[in-house]
Length: 166
Image (cartoon, rainbow, N blue to C red):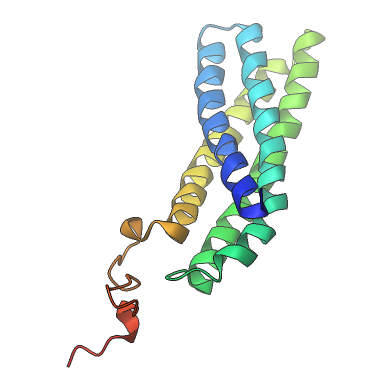
């Protein structure tokens, strides 16, 4: 299993975990249940760990992907930039979640405030996760790119940008 394969295995959980965690956290806030909030916090921590694993394997995946047809440095760079932003948000969300877990276990008066902070950071994480997932998908899925025919490979193996349509 190479870095590209490992990256493909681990990179989905930070996004999906954050989405599920956000839904669970909203439920916990609405029904005022700390156990449910704690489940969301644990999911956010796991998402941050998988985010770290995705970042750790990203460079190796880049080395492999940049040699594939129809993959440009620009596409990889856009994905890398979005992934770095998402990783920072996930690390912050993980730290906030650890604080939220601690405050919930101590039954501290600031626990509710931390849940709202986690909510805001999680919403940002879901937004950046969507962007990161889309730019990552564009690396190999040319059909979801803004201009899918610009980098398509025709039957002769020539990229569309290399063809002379005259």
